[in-house]
Image (cartoon, rainbow over all chains, first blue to last red; front, side, top):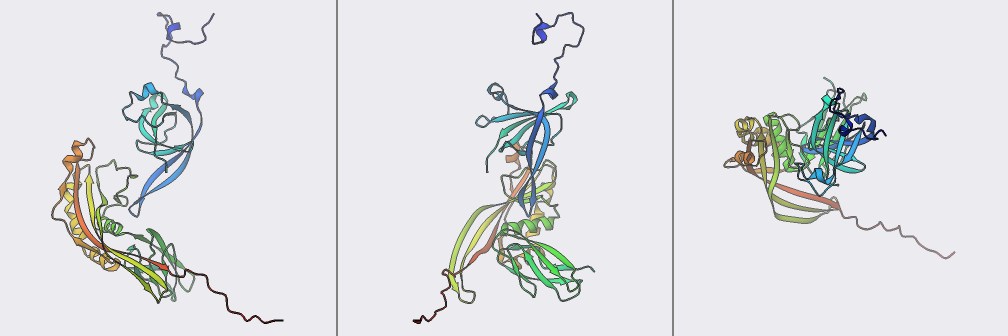
Length: 127
Length: 238
């Protein structure tokens, strides 16, 4: 019987075809809406403006085992990982709202040669 | 010359009065203000008691109009304005200390202004019969902490210009107009560059000075506590 899951275990050692796993993220993509908070200084004060960004991507909660190896040191609040093929132009410390909760970008991993960008984000202070 | 509004300043304190004047149009001019302030028919603008922006608008007799943005702030805002103008720093490079700010990632200079101490001394509470209002005021002595940062060497090379800015003609004009006083210029710069470097942040130049300022905080509120009484009427038996 043909196995349901085709992984490295089901490949023979003399196989000639490429052995890299198929990272077809796009089949998992769905429409996501972020409200991105941008900050400008007006009259010597910080003013926050909100812009709605709609894009295709994946939002994944960061599991505890991965939290232990993350460098940001945040354990109390939720962390999410965002995978997208479009550059959201977010950099570390930028703020956005997702499902009415504020998140702050902790790290941006640019895997654009492989077709995606990953953001590690931590839940942030609520107003 | 097109219609414009002339004023002594566009950064003012709360509760001050300043004449503004329409120019370049056909008189007479009509003035109005959008925001917390007010303006008389002759063009005397009075700022409100809230930090923010007022938009003064002038309309000449032909119907042309011009606007002027006036920023109303605390003495710290005025210090920030003096430093930004005199050092010729671009907008957004001087701000009042705020945790929300995202630090710049370039090499140029930026200045952050905070308060290390505020000491109220003396207060007054009196009834102003002319305006039927209660006036409460207090004098304050504050120490403003001015931090000059840069990732490149600009802060190291230009930090003394902050002192020059505080002693400039523009600073004198602003103090005169806005009823505050730069009381004491600092004796020395605290070089906190080493502190910044050791803490692992990437901002190796930081110099701090503390400047004493005196100002008055005033609030005016109406004393019309009660509803007006009805006019007395004579009740007669039918």
